[in-house]
Image 1 (cartoon, rainbow, N blue to C red):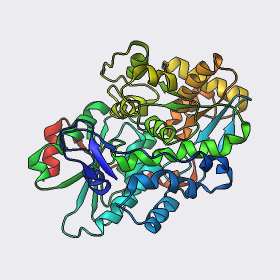
Image 2 (cartoon, rainbow, N blue to C red; image 1 turned 180 degrees about the horizontal axis):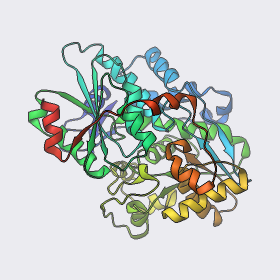
Image 3 (cartoon, rainbow, N blue to C red; image 1 turned 135 degrees about the vertical axis):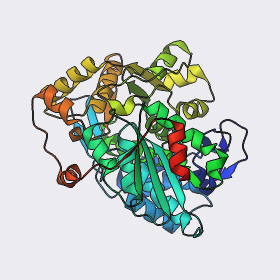
Length: 431
């Protein structure tokens, strides 16, 4: 499989090269040259297939020629070795829990898949370490740190905005040590992301270090997120209603993967991009004008993104056809007050404790289903509510039980390096 830069100024790359680079030399995101289609017969008995079997069929063509079949099956099995429960909220809405992995966030799947792919590729590279450079608005950092912890030949550098991630999230990305370093940035997530992109284009750095990114701009982080949507369809096919999926959206990698799953044949009827007040995409879907903004902090901080990188991939999937895109994707934005009310509503009607991101997803789904009553919807629960303990406990007036695997992390000492700007990152990488 060949990947091309969406900026169209770099040479095509094979999967391995695109993963190691993270971003193309022209600063464009990589996108597959061909998109395969799964046959309709694949879905006729999908409920009888195992999740690893389904995942392999979905992603294997995207890795053709890069990883042997047996090795890829091993990577997939290790990546998906935890549960993905679907919990009913009412007779028209359920939630798919994506936070049952080691760091209690949906990003575990992409991070684990990428770490194993890069570990496989790096077996052949004994002369130079690979530096994984990643910006995080909350959960990406912890998931990437855990996924790459102790992987030979890999160093991980995580940039996160000071004071704008939850305490739990900060502990998960600043307490691991070993080959993981956390840089605390005086700014917002978009500043962190811009620094990462700039480092990839800085020849002073790239002459000395082999950089790659573990954000969802990296195809090995982005594509395995397709698995969630196949899991949802496998479990809900029996309902026999058009399926709508609402995705809490920040950098738009997750929902982009869902739209790619649909493009290769998965019968999802409609997608809802649910955002907080950082509403670039919902506004685009109303006006046809894409206008990046400076991100604003909210209680759903992983979605505090003012210029979502992956939206250009969504446009590519739809051939930049605005009207065609609107037939498949709706977008709604919500305030923190609306999010808190949704947390209460979900808890009152079902007893379910959502996190703020899931609550935003619920609101978007509820708004869409109001005008489409014959459909069935799920919203994605992308993080365990314990990661947003203050907000959830204060809003619901309950105590959230801390999972055992998190208790030890919360007792560790934070270790981070503060930087103010790109020069601080550059100085660290060259030191």
